[in-house]
Image 1 (cartoon, helix red, strand yellow):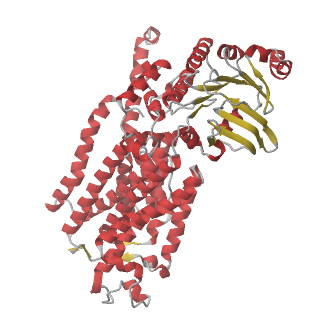
Image 2 (cartoon, one colour):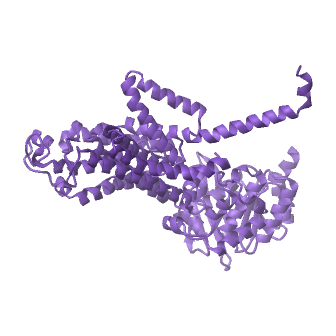
Amino acid sequence: MTPNPISSRIHGPILIVSAIFLVVVMPCLNSCGLIADFTLNLWGKYLCYGIMAVAIDLLWGFTGLLCLGQALFFSLGGYMMGMHLMLMIGKLGQYKSDLPDFMVFLGHTTLPGFWQAFYSFPFALAMVFLVPGLLALVFGYLAFRSRIKGVYFSILTQALTYGAALLFFRNDLLMGGNNGFTDFRTLLGSDLRIASTQRILYICTALLLVAVVAGCKWLTKSRFGLIQRAIRDSENRVLFSGYATANFKLFIFVTSAMIAATAGALYVPQVGIINPSEMTPEKSLEAVVWVALGGRGSLYGPVIGAVSVNALKSWASRAYPDLWLIILGGSFVLVVMFMPNGIIGIPAQFAAWTARRRNRDAATAASPANRVTDP
Amino acid sequence: MSAKPFLLAAEGLNKSFDGYQAINDLNFYLDEGELRTVIGPNGAGKTTFLDLITGRTAPDRGTLMWDDGKHDLLKLSEYQIYRLGIGRKFQTPTVYNDHSVTENLVLSLAGSRGIWHSLFGKISPLQRDRIAEILDIIKLTSHAQRKAGTLAHGQKQWLEIGMLLAQEARLLLVDEPAAGMTDEETHRTGELLLSLAGKHTIVVIEHDMTFVRQIARNGKVTVLHQGHVLCEGAVDQVQNDERVIEVYLGRKSKAA
């Protein structure tokens, strides 16, 4: 885990260059026509996943809380944004009604009360934070107060997201049922189907990713970060050092939920659809795999994991549709077996390996017995 | 009951686990500034007693009052009890292995335990000096940046004592500090505890009789047996007590 001096010296520049590349260079290349609109849009999606992966890492890698329901917070953020986007379609929908199409289809004639306020973008944006944040607050309060930890916490979060998915599949929740929301037209007056709007959304996503990684970096470097990792390694000791660990865990859980929610809110206008399949346990598990592959407890690893797995998925599911799941499963097994610190741990692992080899070579060269036996 | 206020007063404590009576009608009074040694054979309830004081387990019956009856410890949770100034060193050294020695002490420093403070609070020069001072006391100055997990067993024990010092605890509960130490380290640990007595109130649980004689030369020794106080007094008095010899020292010498 200890970084060697060379890699830690090039660490900072690499990060700055990658950040500039994602935020500035990619959109510039796109506007010059060197990167296809489709590709940039795909990257926007990857980076949303990257943000969610960082949120999971903050919980799992740094605090030892494996949440298998992070996709729920991601989707809730997406749904809140989706409600606003649905209302912005206006009369341009199939039924030429002010109501979202699915409501007309279900026979509704007036907009339900809880939808009204979503005409306002600031309100929708506030809900992106508040709804997932409140859910995390209530669930986390109950779980941490009862000292639910380890695998029990993971199972409960999985049950939570499964329950929520079942709820959202129901038509009478008035959230679009299993079709969810789609056919979005405009956001803040800009047409979502033109490249320049999508480019701006991409830039927002890349900026948010950089901000989230930088913010989490600061958080984990503070004394709060020390307490976080202490809770992960020895929660009882932290209690006996006078810290109310439940409050700390709750703070992290809510923060992580809100980070995932903002990623979801940016995901929906770029991907153009949100439905309950986004909040199933499988989606959450997949996100945990990205974090494990990239390297947990590192903040950058999860981003690398999310982007590379999803890029691999985009490619493999087209090139080898039948083999895609085997490829994902196989790479997961490989990482677990040979790369305990994930992709981000490879340089350190390689450095340790060469150092071992050098030591062994030095030892054999120094040993006179070897020279004698060598013919 | 004496008129003098007690720092800690336990009365009529009972705790059983699945029918096993770990603590049986225990009465225990501690004065401020005392260095009290608690001995007793395995299963006498020594560690359970510390668990009760620190809120790790709740007793079936009895009372536990702190600071002349000002606080009822049974109503408080672990971290609240800690904040009253009760620090504990566990039997097996429990430090934050992935943190450096200094970071271990930083986390233990007295002061706010809130989230806000942990995010924006800075370490004052005064606290920095205090850390340097503690590092010197526990002889870990040259290991300040090492990860605690890589320390030797005895050093971890000291680090944990250092963490109690950093928190400026009024009462230090020290569970078998000499376990796994060399004779020289044990002796130095004893000197350290003796030097802290007076400034802090200390309860030491110990098995090693040489060590007990060293640290209990001015203080009282309490002998626990089957969750009950068998006798209490100066170390010589306790060692010559017929009942103690029978249940504890005698059995030990027979085994040896």
